[in-house]
Image (tube, rainbow, N blue to C red; front, side):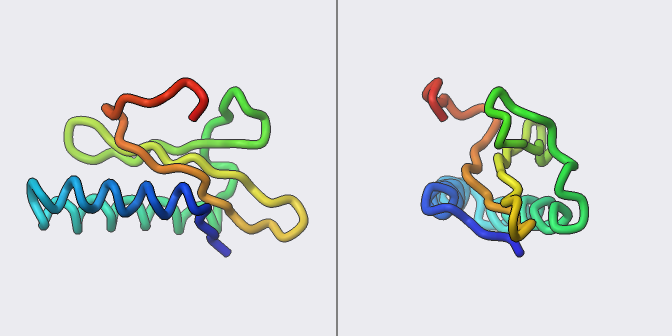
Length: 97
């Protein structure tokens, strides 16, 4: 099962609002690409690369000239995938995220 943290839900909404202002079509295509990539994690949970935090992995979802980063954890007991954050590769990020 795919689960989204409250931060990831906010991330999706932020990305959607930003893209909708510039191109509603691009917003639909970008979110569809992100969801397809997330759905693949159910079958291939180790697909993403490891991060500095041993409990987190991340995948890059290519879109246009850049892409989106999806950070996630595999919940050991249930084997569910918890999406913790989603952001555009060109977004300014705080060091603790």
